[in-house]
Length: 262
Ligand SMILES: [Zn+2]
Image (cartoon, protein in one colour):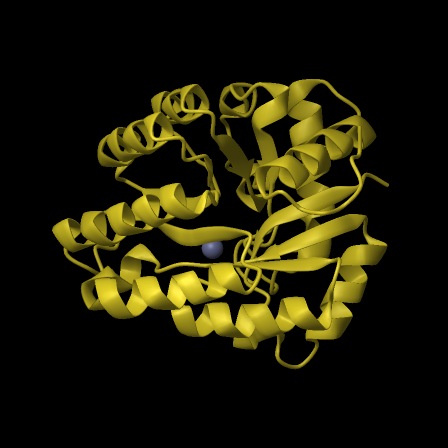
């Protein structure tokens, strides 16, 4: 059974209200060394902080403003909230980024909220967790600039294009793959081989995007083991070896105080 760190799960989501502790226990039984619980808004970050506090040494939290909510981003109020989370153990800012598929917020406001979080990450020396959908060019430009300012981060639930992976890797960033890579319709194993071994991460994005063989059910961090197996197959490694690689990378990316896996 491979070890792993789930670099991106929404454990504070109400979808886990009935069995959160059981889901965390199942993740540990399935090989999870750590879980990074995403706070996609200041309110969810506060909940994620509580989940982390209830599972010290296993769950850590992040704090950000999702691009969907960028229209209501208030630089004073929200940056203060994110600073407060950082002072209370948040290991990263995000998720933040750009989503031009749904366009729930105007694009200029998405860029403004994302830029503010990248600037805060630079100041606080925290990594950022980035969501990018159909916004590759603008994301690449902002990642490149942030990388030049010393910011590192994660391209979460990465699905391409390859050029965005290459920009992120050049900037020193990590690429995280989710359960999508187990889907029957997935046909892009070349993408899975782009990141160098020291930049690879895996994630559940739970409660969304359950991997095969759990499609159609609520996702949970324990199911990351299927993504590890699939990614290992695409890269010609054993699942155990790939699990050790992604565990070590997540530990480094988020500065998690767990023992080195390699
Ligand atoms: Zn997410």
